[in-house]
Image 1 (tube, rainbow, N blue to C red):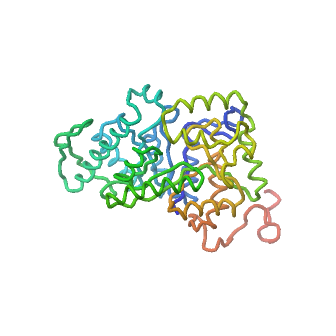
Image 2 (cartoon, one colour):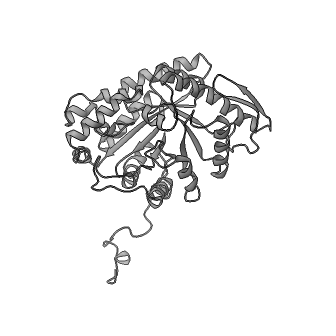
Image 3 (cartoon, rainbow, N blue to C red):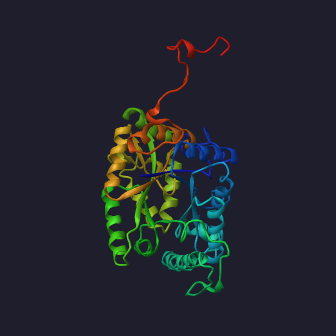
Length: 386
């Protein structure tokens, strides 16, 4: 399994929708999370995009020297940047990070936010632009390894003798991730991407999406990988986990929930619509929000995008992750509130179960020194001055 974590460049909190316990996304805090993920052994981190976030490319570049092995999953937004410039950005960040760049193609989003960025395209047009963008972007990166130039003429982008003088470290290009739930999104995934991502829907729904993308990809002689984007609330006992889930939404009022749900309903994103439809009732009890065993839609009450979390003890969370893995999912992009503490908690409770090799530990977790207050060993007991 590839287990990635998340960098909350929009800020962090112990409670959804509340200033209480909130944390500003300062560079120091962002760096703490990245260093934690790197030292714990996470494969990489997703750095989000949008006007509510710090720019993901700048954030990723700022974290290169603070980390050693951590990969950065960074968004490309077709229509907001030209393929040639995007290719240069890709090659540069991949080179400077010594091959640690992953690309997250983001074709959709909130139409009002996109309009604020100067992009006035409907859902179908955005995917047509994205498909052409990938072809031009990819052509430049491929050609850079042989010092060739590229001519490209399409319906949306034109390029004459385009050339990259500095190729990326990864050949022919960094891996391309992409998520979308519409028919055009599945077609784009089948034709062009390396890893197709879905938000955390019930396994039966995820199975249908994977089967459709697989079928479409086979027609092009391709076999993409698959990933799931989820929140996690794992505790040593099931009761503790559900108590933590209840605490996370305990500061929300009905007005805030209604306003958020109204905003989500206006979006033309099929994925966001599917998140919106998961909630079974009008309340926020476990009965309303547990949409599948251990799969909880509480995060989506007010948070856009990924709105579900796995909630349970380590054995339950492992079972649910392996259920997705049995469908063909081998990349899991996870997060939890607050992201610093939960990065540690998930690694400590789940990495041994999932066979993920945690960095910074000795084989067999052999203890070679005093940890905490070890009073049973005379030579390890704290001194009076401690």
